[in-house]
Amino acid sequence: MITNYVQSEQAGMSDNVKKGAMAGFIILGFILTRWSMKKVRENYDIKMRDGYKFEETDYNFDNFADVSKLAVFCAIAGVLCGCTGIAGGMILGPLFLTYNMVPSVMSATNQYISMIAALSVVA
Image (cartoon, rainbow, N blue to C red; front, top):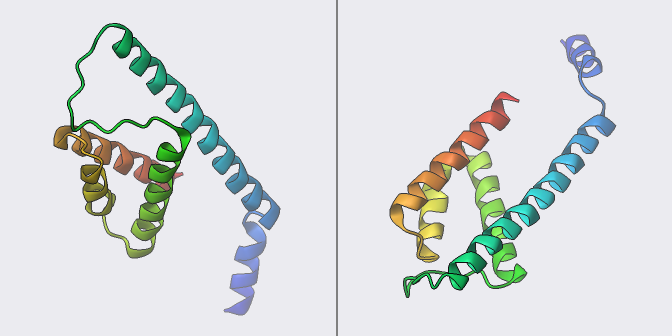
């Protein structure tokens, strides 16, 4: 039994490859977050230029700290979902509602997050 475990460990990836993959995933996450923030900001600037009427309950992510705070909460929720096996929408749904997200947008966002989680499990 012990020899089977040792053989399976030798056949797997090395620790350096695992750490490199994790570091690459984290760096890619930061890059994509910054790129997404830039695109959202461009859309916001266009709406402001054209006189778009925002709802008074809309939450504005005016600075990097606001976006970072939401990202940290989502990361904590992701860890909780991964550890407990419950669906991400059960944790993230109420979080998004506290940011006054429209329920239909919240539902679509939760479905997108579920797709990303399923793809990561497959990978």
